[in-house]
Image (cartoon, rainbow, N blue to C red; front, side):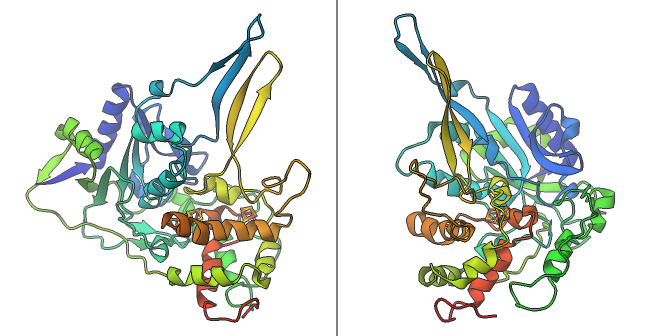
Length: 410
Ligand code: SF4
Ligand code: SF4
């Protein structure tokens, strides 16, 4: 029998989980931005009709931006005492209302955090987390999950998948540019001070794609709401954790006699991702890398918002008596990322660092784990301050798959 939950009862579910001492993470609006946040009260939780995709992924709830992994202290006999965090005391958490492109990052991250050494910090949080995903009933211009092989109702990484029940309004489809994904209070109204630029994909004309991304979004004036308002959702438990959550709160679900029609947005793939790796295999050296990466600032905004970027640095802080060891997010875009103690940097230029990001996601990760380290969420394109658009880069690469090695074909 199909299980259905209303938006009102989703809020009730959040309240019951909070009352039971669980940490509930859901999209909330902070200063005009939609972000995943641990709820203090249920009124903060946004209905799914008010967002396409939160500003950054939820990875910080599995892999915090900074985390103490060890403390040390020397006693009066100069004996070192080590103290490790009590991971068993981490709270159980439920992520409520995430999107499939974020949930799908978890099986990808599982690989890198578990292949040679099982990272206890990541996996303890994985064990203690239940993921309730809402399939996308609309998308925006930056979404390209289907180009990477995912879907607006993809199941990977979710414990429960909710799909909005069709209410006669049809496929809400694509929203005008980015509908709240970009800062509402953009200081210059979203204008790009650089003026018209070169379009990487076509090699000529003005950079209309970038301009549309920077334009003030008409949807922002109403906070990204769509006219459909709060909905009802068909619930499918995909794992034992998901079944347990639904069983424990069955009074919040209605039983529908038959599976109702659902509303899942239709998003066509924009390029053939299978063509990307063969091109990368033969173009470690290519003029395109400099052409693209000359814009890159190395700021790391792309990596920090990305659900699958996972690089970190280990730093010791302290003195001769006591201190701590921290695990901090890092990014291959940073000029310091690969600097050796000698001062030598094997990736000395920004073009080499940008190439590494693309090769890591679409070549090395695929070779090692049979998965690409990208779910097509589009955040790196939205967040990049200079409009470097990975989607456009991948389309260009896929279009050059039969081009001669080492040349740029415009
Ligand atoms: S966000 Fe843009 S400028 Fe910053 S490191 Fe990434 S690609 Fe470079
Ligand atoms: S690389 Fe970009 S599009 Fe792919 S998952 Fe990361 S942020 Fe999203």
